[in-house]
Image (cartoon, rainbow, N blue to C red; front, top):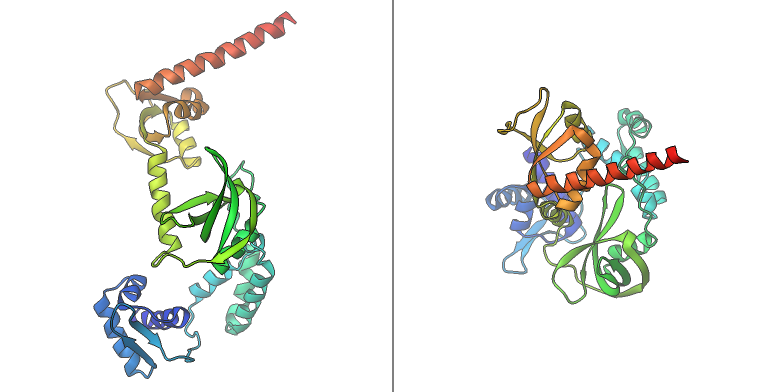
Length: 329
């Protein structure tokens, strides 16, 4: 574990240049005191690194010095091979580069692993699009990706629920989520970082001037925190219901977040279960839960229960009228 951490510190310094003890500690998930001990051990082993105090200080390797990546484990090699599978790289215009990089990496593997490398592509395939959903096909994906790589501003015509408008964005990263591409960016001159769906880009002008990325910004951390906050805000209405065993399977298969709860005071039919879940609003919840027909009964909130009854009556009336019309014809 310690040897792996020392190698990781070397790779980070080689890839990113100067880093503070705090930044290294955060990346390694250890204390700064542990990092300082590791730096001392690397220095004692002859690694040419040095440090500077102060706000602009940190540790760095001697200019021009690098180490070969050695000691790669079999799981690490498999992870890299999976990352090279076709799909997102092709959409970004990097399919040929990804294939070339994979071939170079395979050529550098020990002979015993090369056959396994070929098996990865034959036996594993990643399809990020959910069932019964169309793949996003944003028009400007490659242009936006190029601006992300180069840290260049872009002028976009973006359509939101408020309407379409031109905006000057500083693109910080791209995220592929369930088959949809999202741009993480901030509006030029504003500090807040936001998420923009690429499918909503109506037009894009050429790249503008370069910009400086926010200090300490990490795409993975931003997305994790943003997604957690978004999901909590998206479904603020808590629902208590009882569901049949069949419906419980449907909820699991649809990956709808829910929790089984103790039975309420209301009589529970045999084989049914109490559940708690969340919906965006009373109207949206009614539309969504009607799809489970009579396999679910909402107990709370009463407003949702009433809305379900109202919409169910409208559906029943529509089909009764249609049946009478056909008989009359």
